[in-house]
Length: 130
Image (cartoon, rainbow, N blue to C red; front, side, top):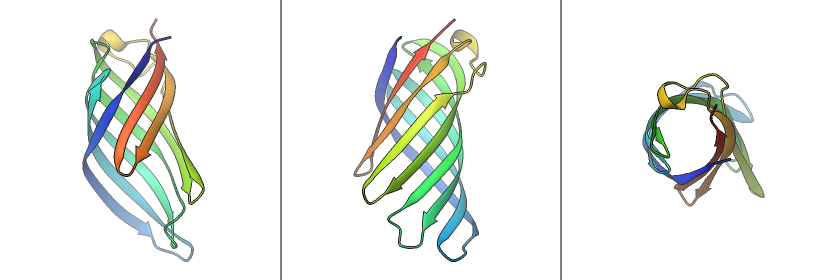
């Protein structure tokens, strides 16, 4: 199974709070990114976030459409994100939505993780192609 690794930068982050109740703020966030490495391209992401008022705990879920290349194969696919973080650690994972691949990435499936270290983002994505 191939493993794609690399980094990405967040080009835009547009949060829209919709529930600022006691305990946590819930927001919709639209994000654009640029990927470098084994995945090269851009993406648009929409997530729903929950951030505790003490700001040491947060979670999100959402979807991202990647457009570019994976190890030189051109196309698009959709990633499903889930993440939780707190003062003791975090877990950020993504899976490819089955049957969402297009072009040379048709039939792609798999999953991986995102690492956020002091604002620098890296990733790995283990995938298979039909």
